[in-house]
Image (tube, rainbow over all chains, first blue to last red; front, side, top):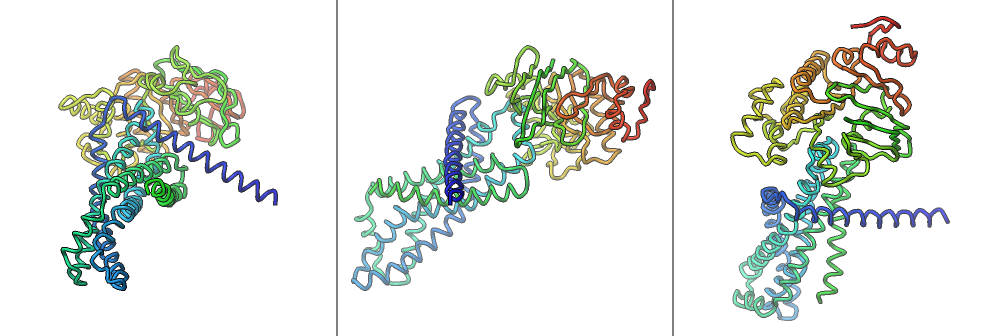
Length: 256
Length: 251
């Protein structure tokens, strides 16, 4: 019994230590960001990878999410004769929750795993050591641009997600199920408030930071083997996803 | 130029370096040999600050680097270049961009000056016309040559070679050794090489040092090393086919 408690305790301490190391890792990377040389080109390159190249999967997810939300919402609201507020139901769900969370999860699956793998391979093949030997700080060159790109890119993707999702809902609700087009859009206008929008923005910025931080950290400290790389990539995706959902709850409870 | 004094290092709870005392002669090619797992690469990484000793000192010139970090360590590293075992070329960059990388990132050079210097280095290592290729398209020997070109492009004072011929066939390994010695004679940098290639290293090295059980067992000129009377060292260097009899000069 004592052994079980000891192991649980040791595991908990290890997790807390790792969180602390991760935080120091992120803070160091941001500290290097404000020191010259400034690598604007690197940030743009990462923004292209994390942001632009995730657009297709985000649009696809958003479209079908909006459509299924409208489908489910219509039949639930029809029981109360409230089909007219379908627009606001879709829009508020998208802007407050589904947009930030699902967009961040898609970015984690696509770009986050790729970041972990890329940095992990660089670690295993000594490319990161090569940067060190050239007196180029790997946090400044490799990590900081990815963190910035995550913080900028994810909110932009969430905005695209929200718009596409709402239009997807309109496609099903208005065009397929016969909800009044005027009612759909006017219910959005009356229900959606600025606090819903900035809540979504705040979430998306923090989710972008979570995804890029966790995935970069896991790649940077990959163990020197193929198994280690595989484990790092899996852990990065799982930890990012869990942290997104947990942080979403806490942020929502604060914002509401 | 490089001195290690009483350097000790443990990895994974196991003692690897157990009191290394070593001085690397300036302008010479020193090769470090030893059995697998003795800590040769670990020793090399201490010289450039990629690892820090648990105890002891590492001096580069008149700067003690074992507790340095950040900008001060980077200032010391500007004197170095390193050729890693796998060349450590950046996968996403072409050979040209890899060799140009230190020029662009450290010296902030641009334009035709970069191209001139890169083409010159590629020619010196026998990779003319290969600048457009990516590391995945190169053979092992070509990757090492590209890595050497990148190491040479900043004209460093000190170059560290971590098993530069591992994984290469004998002919390719000889060509890499020939290239290293040619570059060393032309540019006069201080070279420290970790290698298993016995007896070839005796032909190209000025000095040879052997690690045994975490300490430097012997260090001498290549010729003197082959005349060793230590039975353990004699057995180690004999395995490669060098018949090192006391009092006899081989090669």
